[in-house]
Image (cartoon, rainbow, N blue to C red):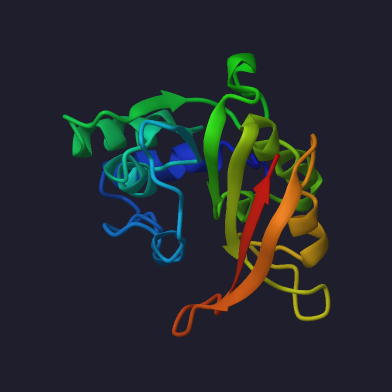
Length: 200
């Protein structure tokens, strides 16, 4: 893949023009996110990594979080704003590999859902190290991703399902795991999923 992150913008732009479909652009928020027993929003700050058209960001906003949501694709952010014109979510164009410095330790809840798994190995480790840096003291990082082991991965992708070692790699910058589990996603092309929670 010649452009490991720029392809997101190309795909969203082609979808906007009716020349492609974004496979993860579905109306409902992630079932694995909805299954979590998250703390009440109550105005706490949340950050959604790689938000796309905003389905998970809007879900967290409805739970009472003050949500910032970003994507590397400007077209995806335009789409999120157009779909949710009266939303209180703050949508922004940003790069996970070069995020705003002001976001460091700035959020009580950080959601990384199925983004890092779309990045090739040469930048995936760098990306894995970033979401935890957004988590404020006492905050929570939620990681949702396809699961695999090196044994059953054929290396094709994206997505590239994450190994346990890669999931463990999210515990950076003082984060520690709360729980790391595998859950079933029967009937999907990636039937085993990671559900990992970390706190500072």
